Length: 33
Length: 150
Image (cartoon, rainbow over all chains, first blue to last red; front, side):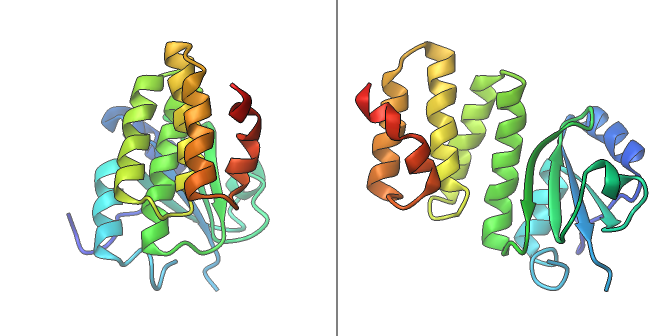
């Protein structure tokens, strides 16, 4: 575990990881301000 | 969320171990339109195929984010009719976060999962009784109200 969340930025890559790691995807839509 | 919740050590550990996190701006094309995002923060839980199963809009503290993510995970399994797996996650949620905002919906969903997996309607009534006792003002208590008659 690192000291910060390791965010993906590409949904296709996140879904590919989700299938490999058998985990759900958490997508955060944020306002960068 | 970025200043308070996501830097929290328990949140980092939970997300690292349980979900694949992706972060995109609220005006991201095409995702913001595809998911019809109108306000932030919007947290959307997707299954491995990219289908949405759970969403929250607005700030969540670390103490509320983790149970919300557990609820999202359980809703994926419920929607996929893997009730046994959903029940394990719901029990984990209710054991660790009984006072969270996600708890009443988790109790409701636990009752439904129990009924769907056993055909025992008493589990629905037990869900209502638990909700009425511990969360009398919850919307989920109101939604479970008919089960009192079982």
